[in-house]
Length: 239
Image 1 (cartoon, helix red, strand yellow):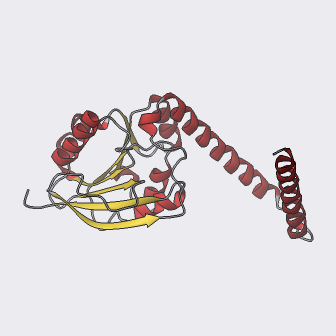
Image 2 (cartoon, rainbow, N blue to C red):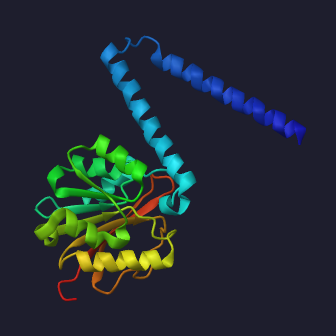
Image 3 (cartoon, helix red, strand yellow):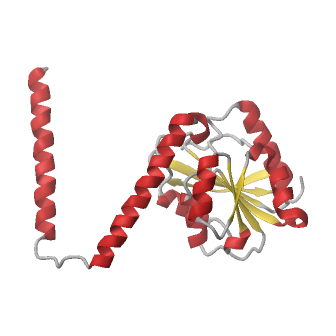
């Protein structure tokens, strides 16, 4: 056993050395980055580190509300945002924004910030989101009483909701809370509305929403930790 441990340590050290050597070879002869690029890289790394630190704090304090060991990747967020139609003029509701990965993808999709309303239950994350995205409306509250939040926020325009994008960890939340959220989605989303969410269950499961929600699309994002399935539902115009 000791020999195996010692050999493993040697392999790790050699691997690290090879990485350093390979990087040195790649960097050799390259012109140094301009100062402004170095500054941008440092700011980007600092921002990413801050987001990840906030995610870890939420994971430790509220593991069931987070529901994942790692934050969603930009690729997963981009996949979710790609299903938002650009020809609608209704409001887009994002549930469980976290550190704003999906929020950024929605805005990069070309959605007008005035159409996006974010709902987040964590007070710390709400403050972070409001600072990161001052151009959008961030609501501090639970999706279990979503209709109340939207009626207060939108008033007479609460019927103009066209899409709900959810990153809520439905599989890890208590059953009674999940039932309340599903009822809210049923009551809020109008006929022909769209629901986009993701799940870590890669195998297609049986219908988890009421019969008025019809699954119209599904796509697995393998380059995510862990891999995730994006599912798209349409609200039936009949029920």
